[in-house]
Image (cartoon, rainbow, N blue to C red):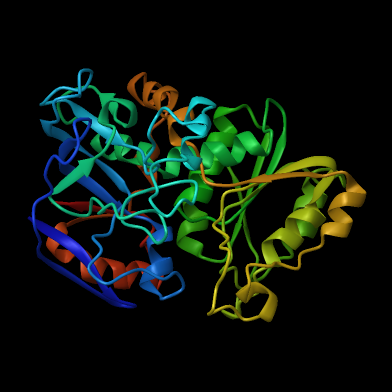
Length: 377
């Protein structure tokens, strides 16, 4: 099969690799119809997260079931399915408690949590390819209506839509709340969209990329370009001096100012400043235990010196971590089916799988208009 293969930082190839096969009774083989490039894929691409050469990339996947193992009895050949980026066994303590993002069995390293084509998430090849092996298929796969309707909406169910919703959930967004979202990438835009779905009265989206901020305005959010506006002042003023009820961090450890200088604590500091006393912050931007390429000695060790003292004094709660996709994906699927949500409005490009190398380069360089790229095998 053809697949996007990681060779080294900034070096990818689309090449023929061995087809996946059924290895365990609960496996399924999926023929990929759409696989997305995720902002998180840029961490290994840029060399900021260690990944072994030869790994097939891609953790945002959907397709058609082509083969099943003898132990699979719910999923059938021919089913159209979404593949959560979390790979989970379904029977460990964390899975039973709904934390499929922290499965205790799926990752051979012993680290809680497993996934496809990503550093330290296990040996599982990703789905930026023609075929994908999915272990524990009955538990992991989400069934979708047959056919091709909503293809570009459903492909958001594997990661960015549930992750954005998870950010809103952790930030305790509810009817009438004001929400500050930092980061207008796909996850930030989905967090803003999710905040509106949950009844927020005001949603602010902070970034410096004009094309992405323009997308935020399309759904009724207030776009704030931090290159020319102090976001904390603007949001505080717009909330009658109180600050936002809820904050969502959708940037992560490579946060940088408008000049491109990295400040890993920058977004957390801004959120602590702009969220009102007793408010809530949800962190879905990625932070890592170690980052040799960081700009500070602390950040190299995964330590981020943000203003915890002010957060404690204000009584702000903070929650974070990878999204347990299965907690949300069925309900979000049904919002799409019933016409209540169309997350494909963030899609900027659909390209053939063989053009993935160039698409990665343009997405990484934030070429104007490159917001969400879908790969079509």
